[in-house]
Length: 76
Image 1 (cartoon, rainbow, N blue to C red):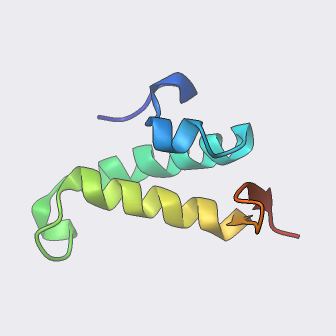
Image 2 (spheres, rainbow, N blue to C red):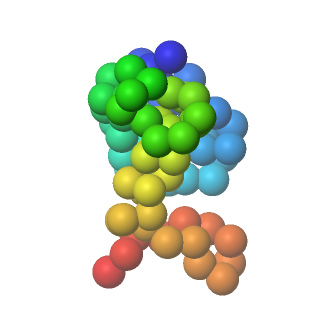
Image 3 (tube, rainbow, N blue to C red):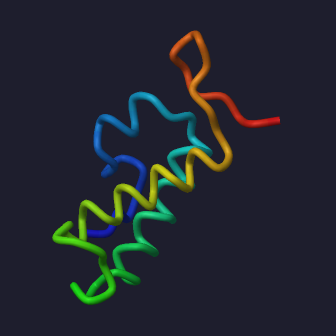
């Protein structure tokens, strides 16, 4: 279930990430959704959706970090 817009992202993403972070998440999720279509491409018993969410959060964490204030900030 790829996301066609930011509005379709889960609340746990939309309500915490800035717009650019949401864009990263959406693109990474959609790419991983395609990449891990086959069960053989995934490790263990994780579903395609679980893997895509993990990949998306990993992509966000490459460019953002969660600050002491609980908000996500762009890495310097």
